[in-house]
Amino acid sequence: MRKKLLIVSPEQFGYQSDHYYYCKYLKAHFDIDFICFDKAHPIIQEENVNVIYRNFNKDKIQRLLSFIWFAIKKTKEKDYDAFLTDYFKMVFFIGLFGKCKLKILDIKTGSLIDNLFIRWISNKIIWFSTLFFDKVSTLSANIAALLKLNSEKTFIVPLGAVVLDGTSKCFDKIHLVYIGTLHKRCIEQTIVGFSRFYSMYAGKVSLKYDIVGFSHIKDDEEKIKSAVSKNNLNEIVIFHGRKNHQQLKEYIQNATVGVCFVPQTPYYDVQPPTKIFEYALSGLITVATDTSENRRFITDVNGVICKDNADSFCEALETVYAHLDKYNDRQIRESLGEYNWKNIVTNILLPTLLEK
Image (cartoon, rainbow, N blue to C red):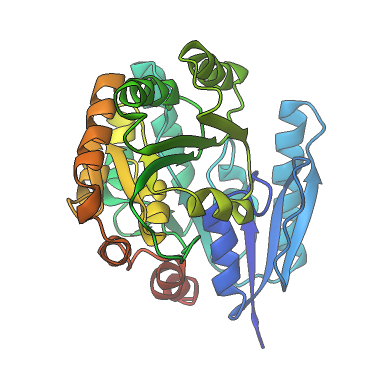
């Protein structure tokens, strides 16, 4: 008899890459139900994954409580062998009242709030929530240490990637791509840095910058559009907005350099870099901010490290340009080849789900 797995996430199915690939590679072993909000994005389907959409058009508190209550009720209606839920506000109620043989809380990050005291409180709330689950998964040992998670029930499920583009890369141009959230990432600094680089090298090499992403804060997108306009780059830097994971191939295919840019802060310092894996597995050079996690993965073979400001970003692009002829897409792919989703799900997550 096949085992049954419930996954709970406030994010609409298909718009969070880790859960999409969890389902893709676990469905051979489990009958999967996936509860999420319908946020009116185009529907993404995965064969043999039962996605249960919940109404997003309610006030915030009512929406959250209704979502939690539905997930709890679902665990009692069906004899699940395991359920895995994202961390979100009041998620501990699912751990406390949900009925399941194995309850896993999946924590992607600590608090990103700027205020030190409020961030400390928020991290304590995350820690408190873990008390109601059998297991806790997180992205890195650094995050586990930051949140002071119980080592006996915490396991690391690193971020991964798939090969979005397997075609050979010819490094005769500098076509940048940024893919990801725009919230608190200061991507406008990369635009200013790119503008300076463009003013020096426009006649020497083909240049372009595609930005793919979104923010729930409108001002984040406005800063990007303003930086593009202010630097007269409307024909060179293109903001594409939000795209689902299946739409990313064309942007990766046209690029030679991936941008992995975050502010250098204590909370971003411990965040593993999904984008580095996505870029590297598709053969792109990566320009990444100087954080502890990024330094673990960026080498002379696959990229360049920079500081979180426009001048340093420009200098990193100059370094890339100076060494274009040394980059090899096969070597770049091999440098982080182990970080593919199939390996991660099959060798790390699956054994834990099968424990009970």
